[in-house]
View 1 (cartoon, rainbow, N blue to C red):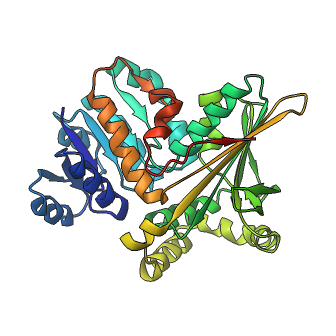
View 2: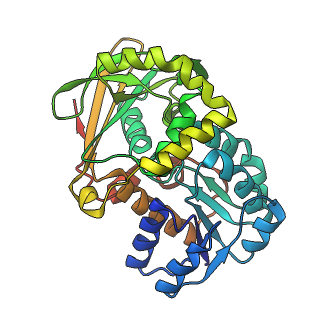
Length: 349
């Protein structure tokens, strides 16, 4: 089966290519820039250069391709035309997004994907494999759970340039939580709570992470929040700045901010990633107020993303009868996390 990595010349895309080569695969490398040719030539791989302005042109370039791994953000711009083209060309679609809008769109195309006989599975990286699998593990321990809280913390790591841009754009949309099964827009840093990720309690705030959407489909728990470390002082500052972040909706301001990120942002080196660690935490609660918490550690988020993308793509190359929209845990089961590098095992309390 032929496998294409689109956005192969980006920061994360190159990590995915390296992981694929390490496992003995020879993917087709693709992207919007001619620089993908250099990467392909260096590794003796086939390449294709095309943009995403015309669905038919994308589908033509996907001819004969069984699986597409989209590593080109922002996914709010790239996912929709690629998913439609994948349905047209009958190509399985995976990506590494953390954007709620992409999960919503993927799910909206469930019936079309089933008719085409393809799988749509966004979020096969750090967004959202670790948290998605932990959510299902916790739900299985408390089947009557009505509330789910998830959180993550990083040590020694920072976002890539692409992730920083996505985050800047996302801030203009406000916060997100799920209440009684429905997605609700709330202010940024809407709630605060202390979480012990394994190195002592720290203050965290709610963030509009992808699990607010996907964990409901994985667990059917109706109330979901996701937390990320921020001090009380930083949380208060963020709430004050929210009105200015909404200005990102104006294209000229958004362009200015994104260009600024291009100029000043430096992504992690391989040495920095090797020393980094990710901490994942979750809690379920039922109507009686009983709680179960779980936590674990794993590697730097970008190394996990590379591994997750290849792992899920490899699964889709095998024999299966699945089609339609899936979360990672729905596609491959909650023990997908066992296959991720550096997984410490879940500690419950």
